[in-house]
Length: 312
Image 1 (spheres, rainbow, N blue to C red):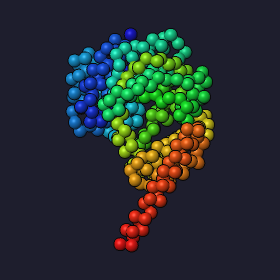
Image 2: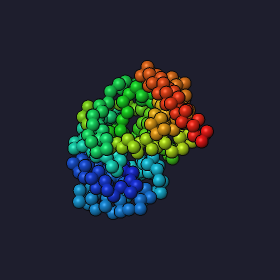
Image 3: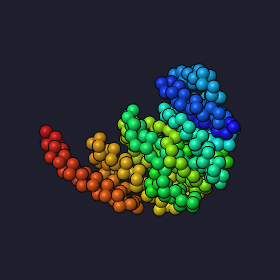
Image 4: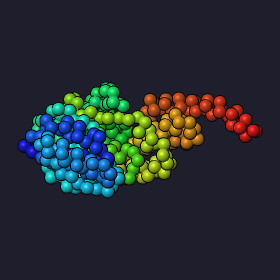
């Protein structure tokens, strides 16, 4: 039964799109369509995708777009998806053999479930790391959404979730954000979803720490304020403000960590102050304290150098 619409946003993905599509070959019997959003690519992403899909017998539709934004590209495909279930995966990630069918089997065994979460393997700079198994989910929708935003539930990856088209409805990714748009999308779905889980890894999630950190390094204040504005909109699906403030603290701590590592101590201190003021778990409180101590030491050690440079 062709039950799944696969959504792949792609921008200049010619080096990886063929491999990503090939990883879906074993699921052809359940895939009704593959919606590849070619988002302002200047390479031959679309042509290579068409060639690969023809060889793999995958029903590909290429949707041209000029979003220059992964969330916006996904939204365009979500509006055109035709099948009962939607599976999102990025153009540089890999699906694992049998994963999609395993997600569908779980959906069939729990007919009320409309969001199925699978495990995934992290691959950091090309090296396989740990398998992340979903845990901590409850029966209550808002409890799951709140816990997810606060970081109490392990994050899902794009490519580890099967969601019903009915559940998604008009829910869309926030656009033009530098980071965390996936979290806001999943939180909205969780606030109304009946969840099911499988421990089987269904995909490989490619991670580049340097690229991830770069998102926090560019225009940090403006980007944080834009992201926080979208985060606060989650109150319209009844996620508590306290949970959103906890999320603010988590993201602010990440930004502080990146700027501390890159030597921008003033920006690190500003975001560390935001993180310190937010409600948090004991582990995050300890991280904040540790960075405050490290920051104080580095500032003290750098002070004589600044004074000497001024004197010269």
